[in-house]
Amino acid sequence: MGTWGIKHTENDLASDWLIGLEKTLTVSYLSEPIMSFSSNKNVDNSDAIQLFLAASEIIAYLLDRDESKLPTFSYIDEDELDELTVSEELKQSTLKGLDYILTDTTNELYHLYSQENAASLWLEEVNKTKQRITSTN
Image 1 (cartoon, rainbow, N blue to C red):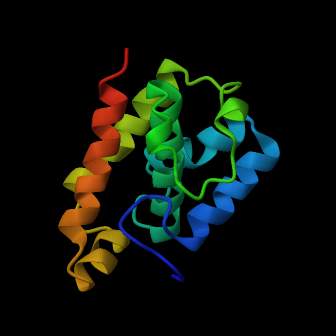
Image 2 (tube, helix red, strand yellow; image 1 turned 120 degrees about the horizontal axis):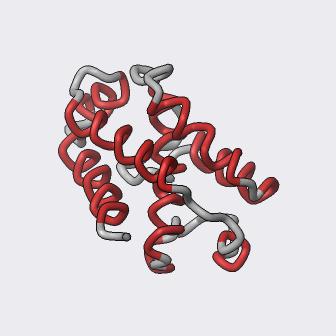
Image 3 (cartoon, rainbow, N blue to C red; image 1 turned 180 degrees about the vertical axis):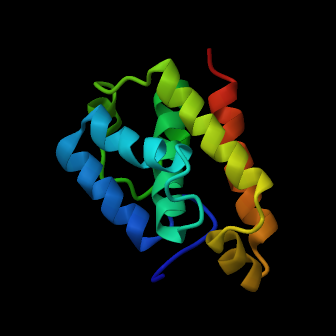
């Protein structure tokens, strides 16, 4: 893993994914890491978890429209994101994946954060994203 931090978009992989989202601006691009992770295909893969969390952050923004929480180095204009909508299925799949991350301390990314004594801070960020999503209708 290259550059990374506790926030969901503070790593190289998430940054690259956000660039891809900006180029495509499609729900299918947004939902792919969510659906793949939530269907238990990549639950122990740190790259899959990072992509899932980056997508989760965008899902949270699309649901609560809180511009102050849009990733600070996001290359995407919030007006462009307004064209994307989140289905109930995508919302529930996102929550399922977040719940998994919050309860599974055996995944690879949790161990990477633990090595830096940052696992609890990282899980706080995951929980904040979950709270943003669950607070929307």
